Image (cartoon, rainbow, N blue to C red; front, side, top):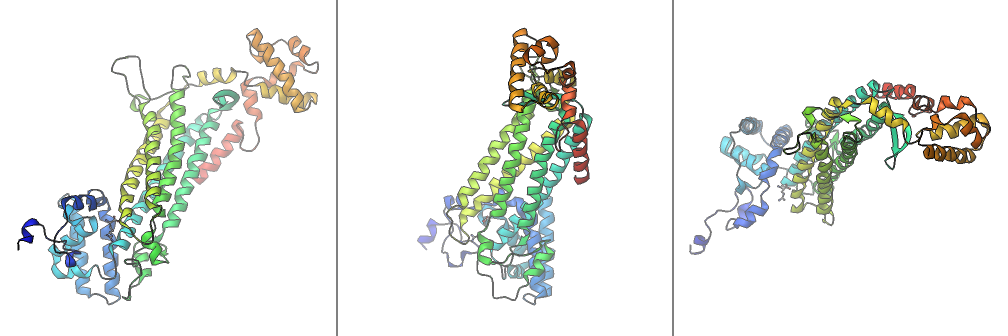
Length: 467
Ligand code: ARG
């Protein structure tokens, strides 16, 4: 009895059979996951209902017990949904919180639910279901973002802007074409999401602790009931695999990188120096000291969220690396990374969709910028190749001299008199001026996937049909 006075806690009611005393307070704190895995309550209950139903169907538990279990689980679901459920840290995680409550509600029948399963396959199931739903949500959100870009692209299929390389004016493009670049990026993200859904579409439940079970379970039945294509094929891999979470994080990291590049462009475009776009009041903030300011905070935060998402990806890769098969408790640390990244990604996509839809595009500023920086120099070189038969390298050189002359005169290429151009190369005629405007430059780039408005419209139609 003297020993008992040092420990007032009893051992765990779920697994404490061989334990004389309860955990140290620090043990409880490091061990518990309920603080974050309570997010999995709906998936946990859904999984348990499917499992109990299968157990009864296979004659492993009675129909009477199954009915009690299902009824009890549904009661717990509404208790949690209505905020009338008390989560206990002593019960570690969502799985044991639900099961303990079930015992209180229905008595001994509750103890039969955990037949032929383990928390290892249970958590793999709950988390997979959660990630699958999150991927489906991501797919829809990306579709919304793509739709926003398609609308802006259509509206601006003819609006010219400077295209950049090295953030130096390169060649004129259309704003519609630029928007469609993002459609391609987010389209790839969405197809990665779809592949990930296919990859993870296997049911883990029934792998049990790691070796499968001696009970005559039907894993195809639970897989079907839970909306999975089929059951997983190796019980060891099933409980030690978190590829689905890592795939989610990699997809989020790549999409986050795309969102961050867009955020950076919006930050640049909305400076007074560029003035290409104006963000709506709804998606910008003011300064508490400088009254003239309108800051692109939402874009900056989207750019920053990418850092968080990358951190989560690296964290989970590092958690998983070096784990021997099968389950190890390290894997409990998977959830917070995924939950945090999912929240960041959702926010970032939603904020970007809003900004893209709301921003005002200053086509006059874009057009003025499109014509500066000798952006039609390539068009002059191409004209020399086409009309004067020069090899491209020679045409490049001649054009370079024309640019240098225009620069020394402080004028555009189109403002150089014909005599100046002919002094550089005798084959130049006044027809050359037709190709030196930004509109002509853009309209000429009709190659598949090029920036000509006619081509951009074709790509918009392609994506509209696909979206
Ligand atoms: N809370 C645990 C997790 O999130 C559940 C699985 C526990 N399994 C075990 N053998 N202790 O991973």
